[in-house]
Length: 442
Image (cartoon, rainbow, N blue to C red; front, side):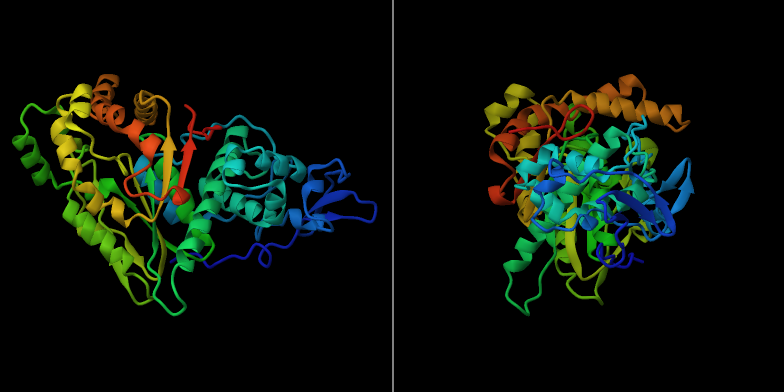
């Protein structure tokens, strides 16, 4: 059952207060902790609107717990177990990319300045005033993410702060804006289909974790969303065997992954059905793929295990490593790898199966496709160290080698022109570094 919507202004009363001397302190229910915060005219808070109350700049959670030397903002985890469990089912430990060197977050002014320093703030057209006006939401969303990822809100590391306040939350604001634009294109009384947001991002860059974080934020703010991956549309084991037999000697089609290894008919049926979930009494099951079947070769999961989604859907979060890739002239792809010619021909059908359903795009940009190898190697080493089956270094190298030709061929065009059929006004490009965090891009 989805969590009930939470209103930052009503559910979370302010915990930052000022006394008659202008000295700030935090209020945790009956507990008062003095954190003397100056609010002089030189403060970053001065960039907020005139007469704006400083008391808006923080709020207290509905639950609090004594932890360490003070009170933490860690919330009751009961409402996020399903999402967290799903993350782990998809990619192992949900926090594998979040380092743990402690750097305590305790003063709101510091957090405000940290938010404003994010590389996506200017890109999204936000100003310090905008941040101050919406600070209740920033703090609420940060609190929700701490709950989801089971981290102490008062002891976030710098990388965790960056992941939440420089990446996940700004992207969520962008998604909210895209949904508003989508809704405004319909007349009053018309049924509004969910907005499909496409996430095109290389393997291992953290896109699945990003999508789960966004899905959880939609859930706790009272909107229904669905998560779909291009992996869910892989051919069955039988279909993969037929594809392999039809293309002997082509390493790019020997296993699942490249264009040609997906059941496009299933994807069309699924995306079409999701677009019709506009009423409360409508529901459907979304396909899932079992990568562990047949000793790792994979097969479609039993339909009885597919998750069910209910209407009315607000948004569909559709992610994949090759979403938005465009077919190129034959000579361009064969110059990268002759085996790409068949893959390139297969790709011609993918726009009608996937891209045309997408109304807004998020492209996660990397400078060097070789990062995919290192990210995958990190994940497999972590799995082995945790006592779980994982690929050897050589197996990782062989696995990634089957994707690198497509990256080398198609990423330059994706970054230069955008995804197939995309509107530049509805496209967000987020450039990330080797630690999977946003950086200042173009």
